[in-house]
Image (cartoon, rainbow over all chains, first blue to last red; front, side, top):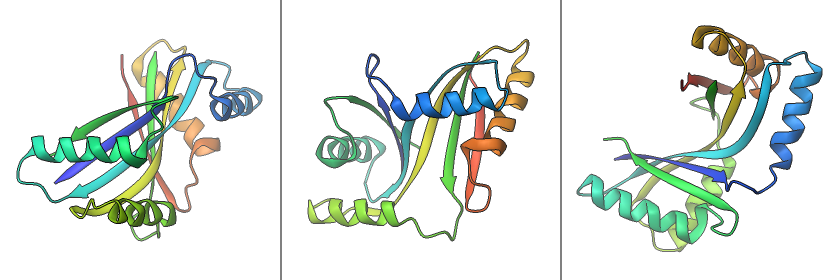
Length: 80
Length: 80
């Protein structure tokens, strides 16, 4: 079963990498860019009997290792 | 207008970071994990008259800076 995990910085946490990329795009004349935030995107393949079980296990993985709950939010989507 | 960009390694390109995280999850007893690949996820806010224009400009940004076309694929989604 495929699962996607999206990890993003919480609102209010300064995204230094995103700011640097935004400044670089500004100097490349992309003046229409108003905001840019960078996160991680993970594609997982897991063995599970049901989508609910897959989602629960991947959520456990996020809590254990994939995300930093202090400054990051995560979202789990099970694809099939 | 909001746009999301997903940047992933092309198939066939070894994902060293993903492999390291997969091994770490394996040693945390997540044995059901069969594959894991890590990419980047970017949330952009752009000024544009139409979704089509926003998509075209964000695609330009990907080509100019956000993705490495040699080893990465990217996907642009305009949200509203």
